[in-house]
Length: 331
Image (cartoon, rainbow, N blue to C red; front, top):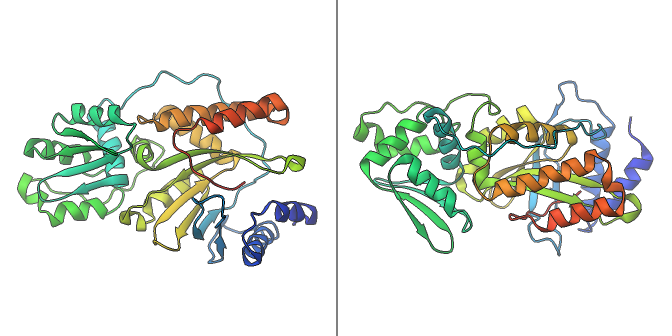
């Protein structure tokens, strides 16, 4: 049963982006709060235009699917301590991690594999080079790991075979006849629980964002911790990975109206808790680990209920401003 007072507060917090935008956002609020979904999953084509003149990262997007959650659920405590950082060591663990990296930003051609990293992530590129045993790292505006040695390409194929979730990279391998060159039977897309291995950590080291959102309305202050996954690569026109994440974590999947590329967003305390549980076990290895560490600290500020005083709010504002990878979103 929807609450008119909450509807009015939600309407006041909508970004100023034209009457049609506010109408569609208001429609969604009523739709979500006025009806219980029998299967907890809603699919509809209502468009929500997030264009905002001062926030250029907002793009026109269509909500594709949303896992209905209790947005008023209380935050559950997490440990103050994060175990010592650990990289994926075994062949199986590293294979899943490498498969995630490649699915996020890998390009294969007739005789080479190319992975592009953020300019701050030299150490990750060199870790991949050392672990595979071949390749070179090229630094320019970004950092590129280039693998051309036949033995290195075969090692990459052996490590990742059977660990890809979509057919995107598999099709590239088959089109370039890697199965014939290296006498390896290339396996079809896998179907595994994304919470149980390093795949998502690898994927998010290139495509994940951890955002602290603080509302501008001081009379009705709201703080949210957003976990987002998005790239601008054509291969993300396949929603499989985002559907896997949504099925385990909750959250919403969006379709970029301009590029046809999917992206994922979650911000409830329920999804925050699942996000912490995963990344506490399967560590990120890029500068996004720094962002996750700060995002996790913000969670602890909120769990101690410190965000309702000026000192706590100042902590959150400082953490937000110090993020390495910034991604704007709305409360």
